[in-house]
Length: 374
Image 1 (cartoon, helix red, strand yellow):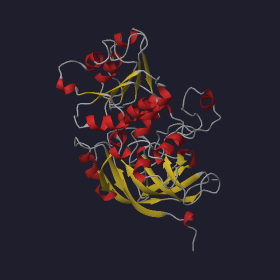
Image 2 (cartoon, helix red, strand yellow):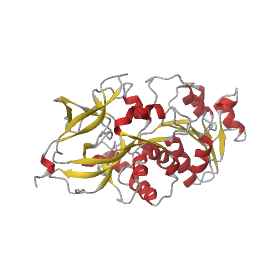
Image 3 (cartoon, one colour):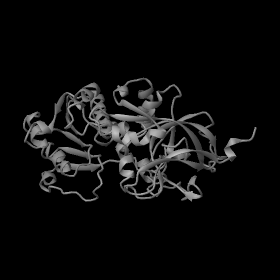
Image 4 (tube, helix red, strand yellow):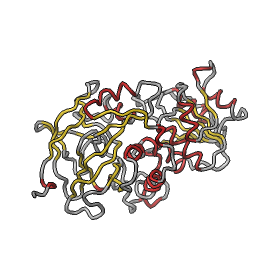
């Protein structure tokens, strides 16, 4: 039998050809992995908000094979790969952890300098393993999960237990873990504290889950979709605010539920521009801390300077401050032991051929996560 690792694979993938262009499912070619890479047969993938922004101009390289959440089985490995073998189950990560660079050893950030976030849509050697009719294809960040096969650098995947639920493994490769990490590693929420989470998608529900694990006693979830109340409660939310029910601002409503002073920590998970200032105003003067996680399409947003002058802190967060080896492996372990109610996120499923339907499903109020079956 010929060694499959030396052969090009033809398979189906979801492609976006440019800003605002419809997503098409087409046959592409996937090259064998180079020395430090693995080729992965995808088991399933899921849809994250970033995949929508990928069709709207983020990070802006086309044509692009979409998807950055997923789980798959290693089909072949490059000749220098020692940590993985054929048959291993892996999830992609869009940031690495070399454990040696200034940032990795600092204990202050997860932003590895050796294996940084890649916005070029290419492999670390600035080439691509995917093409269509001879034309180079890009991927979202470090990988492209909405494809039957993909190639990733070994430093941008994490091996997980093969008994893990594939859909749940897919959820923790980005969205849920980003929120969970923001509470756990970025804000380091203190026991007995109060928390507000704006936007209860997978990221917001992850932040609720992290805050609960760390012992926050008041966890306020904010979403204009009433159906998110039940989801939030499943993950540990104690109070729910639907801003559509009131003429008051989000920060006023949060203060009403927190003794007039606001909360200790807030997590902005929507990327809706005016909510950045609101999320800061919802926290305590002098000590309040806001973690900005949500990304919209606007690079510059209005900002009420008064909200930060009074000693509050605003921090950005990439992948929730999680290190892929040290921290994400812990979340994967908890996921495999079913410590999170991740089944609450799994609301819809489509096949890769039906990927356009996923974008429609996301608009439905009862939709949390769409899983793509391969």
